[in-house]
Length: 407
Length: 138
Image (cartoon, rainbow over the protein chains, first blue to last red):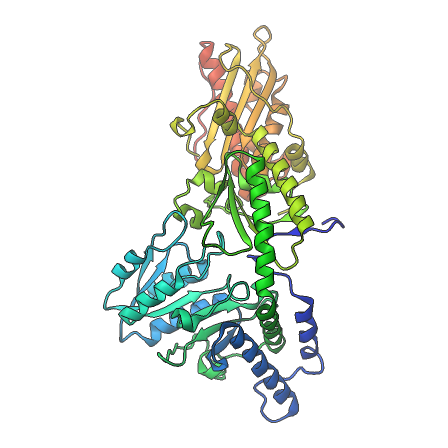
């Protein structure tokens, strides 16, 4: 890495810690190092107090009771606990779970495991924006259905699902509703109770907190939801998740939640302007640039664009010394398959290979965006100059009519 | 993933980018890959009809950095070779030269296929028996 400041537009992968968060955490590595489960001395009491306080800060952010927050190691663990925990706990009621093809792997792979354990899972298609089909969802519910799991917003496109409507359908059929809300908590207002969400997974490191700590919200009243523990041990977290609490991480998570409560509105407003500036400038500067997902129902800081006839990973190599972001082209993986999320939207594999995801964050500046506009435009033009299919496209050749060789 | 200096150089300063007139009798064109696989290579050779040597080579590639560098390197190597020597270029030589990581070996295979495709096209056009052995197993 060179000395120049790197522009970081991969905040959906992880956000940097806010310095205010780190400051809050530091004492809990040193003088306040106690185990929150130690009941017999001040070190334990101080740690427990700090955890309780953080639990309040996090509960306030999502407008729930602090007793409804179960700390985990992150959103992946929270997703697993919710899905497998509900599957085991509600086995007598049924074994059927409904989810989407565009869910995060933490949900999809947990569902696959549940299928091996005797569960049945329906993976619903989405429309061209990535939106759930509410009628198809309702039609998929059977008397064996125990849970609907739909992510609040998609990590790749930023698309926000019609959560309240899904909640109403679940309520009507008496089915639990779980959501992976990793990308939304701390970014936009999220209120699971008002939305009809009974379980919700989220994590600190997507909201300017530390890695290694997340939470599962589990509704305690109307209905009282229980999950079977997936980690056995000391009976921490009301028996739902054993393991010594990550006190510094939880303190940081709490502080990050408190800051988000106060600042997310201004962050969202500022970032949506920068995002729009970036997107509009790139679309104006070049031909054949497409927005993936929904322009209307979208997270304020996310833009997923396809640059036709340019391969995303190669494109990234033109600027990845300066700008960090993600591509839907999974060319580095052995499978050579592009993003399954974009493919589920009905994008051809070629457009999926041509996509970049820009995810802005609290520390993104206007200068960052101005530089990015220039660098991406140069990169796309460079790659198109090299691209035989761009040349054919410009000559009016119908690319779909060509007999491509398999390899 | 860290790429070699040579690979980055070919990516940033690709050699012999361009398009030849494929209707010319002494021009052979190889087009391999597919857009949905994330790479398409078009490699062209121009053969000197008197000496039987490759006078010029050009490419255009849609793909990742390794695919672009592999095809750029291939065009450099092709110039001045006889058609038979060109047929002997092995993808593993490209892998070595560019220090391609294992997940990128297919890029070198594609470049070898593009060379063979260009030569086959040239030979067909000129009524020469096509000698390019079909590479199997990919």
